[in-house]
Image (cartoon, rainbow, N blue to C red; front, side, top):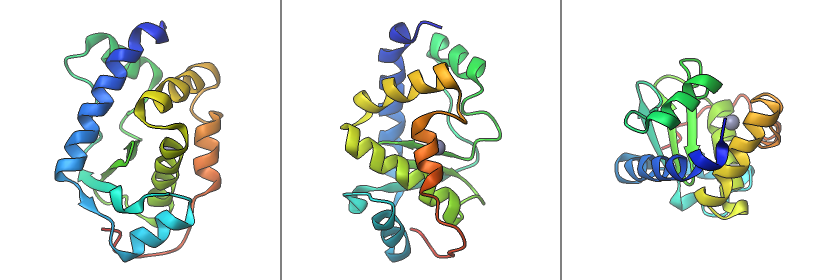
Length: 153
Ligand SMILES: [Zn+2]
């Protein structure tokens, strides 16, 4: 897979998806803001969360679509996707564990500087060591919070 060739399309697609969430998602309520603080998010007030029936995948970006299908990313067993301060969560899966995991990805985007910085690093990790061993995924997993219940938005 030629990651360099895919990156412009991947970043553009991610930006347009993030914009959908920014427009249609909900801001965090008190419980969500507390969870965001806990996992290190600097600007919890910028987070928007959108519930969807399934995660978006690229449609018209054929090369990117194929890469997504080949790597198994965004498959039916994935229930959360974070792009900058925008979080997609599949209906019925917004427990503390998943929300805190996705919020930790928000923190990573903030630390790295945004979509254009995060996506190349993230995809490189997925391609080279796989989803389970990708350092950014391990870090998100290490910050998961279990057991809390709350209305996050
Ligand atoms: Zn993750």
